[in-house]
Image (cartoon, rainbow, N blue to C red; front, top):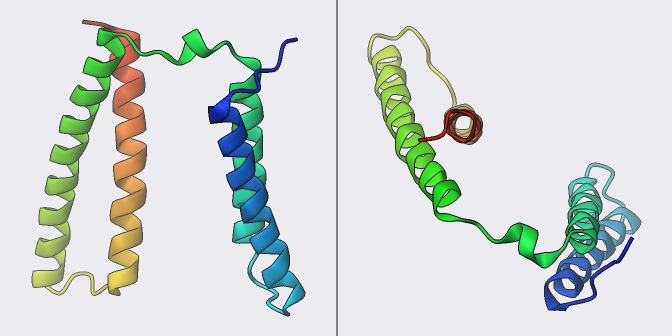
Length: 127
């Protein structure tokens, strides 16, 4: 198995090492809850290693995949607008009184997962 050592892989590994160092530093300073930086650094290390073992031509996107991402983004944005309207209606009629952080988290997770689902669907379906 050939491992690439180009600039993209090195930069990803350097950022992941920096995040893991930051996570270890926050843990050493006495913060018990700050495992996020450490976990993010480990995940980024795995992504960089995955990218290092694949040839660089595997990551070049063609027109079809770019078009599928665009379509998925447009439709995910439409779903997000509908969700915002529904949440405003629920709030207006006093059926649900959430905190703003709950609304932001809900919108973020729904948006990301809807975009991933639409992208998967368009990749399976084709043109």
